[in-house]
Amino acid sequence: MKLYAFDAAGRRFFEIEDLGALDRLKRHSWVGYNVFATSSPAWEERLLSAVWSRG
Image 1 (cartoon, helix red, strand yellow):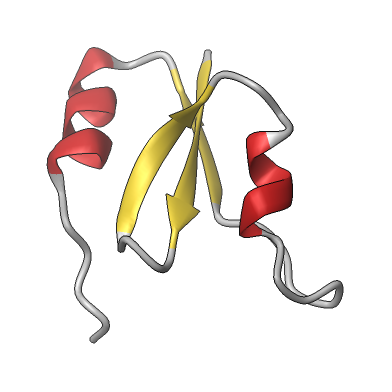
Image 2 (cartoon, rainbow, N blue to C red):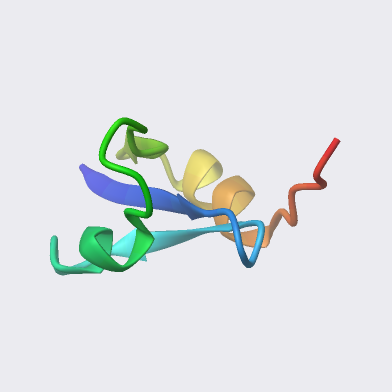
């Protein structure tokens, strides 16, 4: 499975190749991470191509 994390600043998911990348996303110790794991090529494509709006 590949891991993807959501970067709120860029409003995009990115593939996590090094867990150290999560340190750059952590802003508050009481807030969790938005991480998605998949082995599906369809989900991979969807996560990497989407730009998520702020709602």
